[in-house]
Amino acid sequence: MENARELISAAVSAREMAYTPYSNFKVGAALLSKSGRIYKGCNIENAAFTPTNCAERTAFFKAVSEGELAFECIAIVGGKGDELEEFCAPCGVCRQVMMEFCDPDEFKIILGTPEKWHVYTLRELLPFGFGKQDLEKSHD
Ligand SMILES: O=c1ccn([C@H]2C[C@H](O)[C@@H](CO)O2)c(=O)[nH]1
Ligand SMILES: [Zn+2]
Image 1 (cartoon, rainbow, N blue to C red):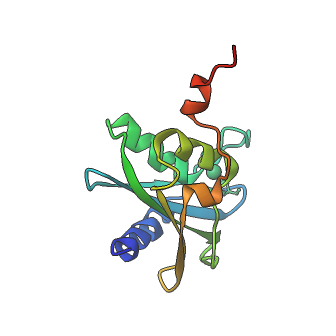
Image 2 (spheres, rainbow, N blue to C red):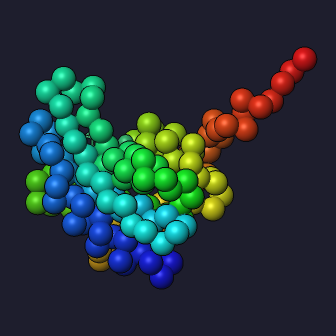
């Protein structure tokens, strides 16, 4: 994956904007569209907790709100304070949002740090995921 290094460093820079007064767990994401643009996102917390938005969804919603509907891959980095975890996996809600806009066998999810990362498909992280094609099935 030739774009991985660039995408991870964009995720690291996105993470600098994380708004995390409650958990201090800071996540950055960088989403590459098929048109070649990179959309950065950070997590944004809220005193009421539930309205918190993950970094991954921030990146997706920025992109979709600007007319992007086709995506290649996303890089995700995270950790407490100034530390990066070796591995920060997307939550279930974010995996479901990816399922809405991405082909699970094509879309790649890069997890790790600038030193070491792994690449997964969405299918690997969300097996048997529910998508729009499931709504088209009829049993009459
Ligand atoms: O994949 C993840 C997992 C967690 N968070 C955020 C939500 C919250 O602000 C903090 C702790 O859960 O991390 C993300 O942004 N992405
Ligand atoms: Zn999430």
